[in-house]
Amino acid sequence: MRTSAIGQNKRGNVCIVCEQEKEEGIFLFGHFLCLDCHRAMVQTNTDDPNYAFYVRQLRKMMTSKIYS
Image 1 (cartoon, rainbow, N blue to C red):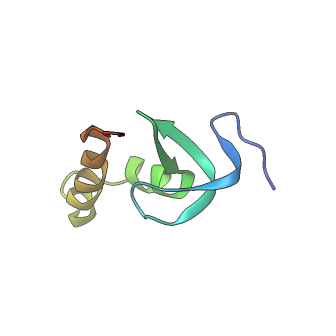
Image 2 (image 1 turned 90 degrees about the vertical axis):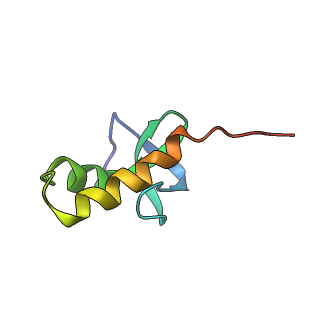
């Protein structure tokens, strides 16, 4: 398994974009983004149909978490 300075989590996390459990990724605003989705988003042009999907998924980061 490759070690990454930008995020390797031994317990696994659920990616905010693909909603799959992954081990490697980064945390943005307290949400996990896997390296596969990060790479795909960086390479996606704004006129690509997948771009709108990525934007919708990333909007989840802006919703506040209310813990009671």
